[in-house]
Length: 289
Image (cartoon, rainbow, N blue to C red; front, side):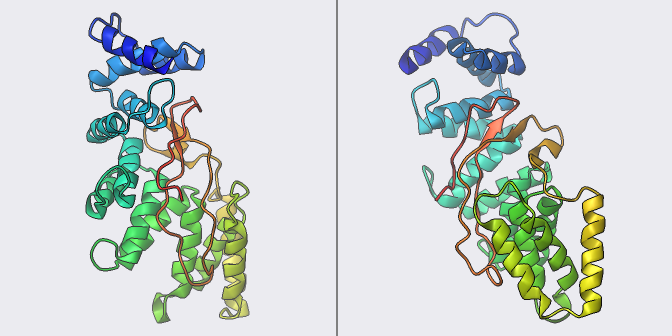
């Protein structure tokens, strides 16, 4: 079946008639018309549609209805990333950061993460922050790390909320902000979507802050947390839906287990599976342990 579909793509793409749209191609896939859907996506991708290029890349990476081909997957991720598709930028950056199927290049990975982050992609905001915090490209830059953690945390990204809380709670002297640390760790501990132990780790880290907080600080922190919750700054089920011009939602897949001292160590770069547009048929497993 996979070889047949691929052969159909190569044979028919040049003579593809009609102005099939991205949404029509996705609709065909959802209706089980796989050969037609892949043919349409290929035609759109050849005509420089970044969303179709990204989806085609995921299909080749997963071997979903076509034969798995990482060279083709990376080719289409590159094309879509050049077209400013944030999901393709994130996927390509993840491969570069981990050095899987591509030579490791953290500098370029950071550039791609930042490009996606600037478009409102929470996972890329988080990954850029990790690179800045840990000094994986140049010296550690805690100011930039805090900026991008805050962006991702405000978008409901629980791992960013956790790392931001840890960062703010562990800094020395005037740089410490225990009230904000308490707030963000409270958000992370309330993440009902986490299956990785993150919520418990955040709860433990928050408890560790209490011995350093006065009663007045604690009351203020609790008030700020409650106010933020009322203003909908809590964990959301699909933060990518808030992206500017987003056409994608998160996929489903394994989360990373929290295997660090929650009081002192931030979580590392990671990439949750992503899926394009409305369909939930693709899970791109990059940077999974």
